[in-house]
Image 1 (cartoon, rainbow, N blue to C red):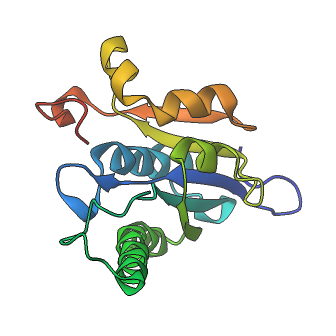
Image 2 (image 1 turned 60 degrees about the vertical axis):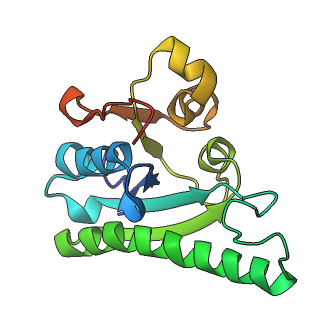
Amino acid sequence: MAAVEGGVPTRIMVAVNESTIKGYPHASISSMGAFDWTLKKIIRSNTSGFKILLIHVQVPDEDGFDDMDSIFASPEDFKRMKHRDKIRGLHLLEYFVHKCHEIGVACEAWVKKGDPKEVICFGKRVQPDFIVVGSRGLNPFQKVFVGTVSEFCIKHADCPVIAIKRSTAQTPQDPVDD
């Protein structure tokens, strides 16, 4: 699996997102699990055979009211919010990039805006050999209301997808939380 002929490393995209419990810059339980699993089960000690492509997708706040203190907002307020969101995403990725450098595996990282399912699955420019995503392990009823990025990616991505289900011990009281 690692480093095909010619020494080109296998490109693994790992999707990461912020914790719904702790917020930025803390990673979700599922994305931490997917990242740790990738390091332990795939990369192991063959750090030169792989390149990790970290992606964090921020869902745009269409109306801007989620973070506004006042309905009397100026265009500058929206610019500041967009800049702040980008900074938050970079802080989230910083943990994962630092971890990659600690063990000596090459990595790249991006913060993108959009629908996570679409951005992760159809990242044509990045062209991963496979994608690793975390999964909350929701039941069918919960999936109807929340939806799952991992299921969508498994069905629609142009490359193989590995979904890593979080352990029962890591599941919060409300399984939708992450």
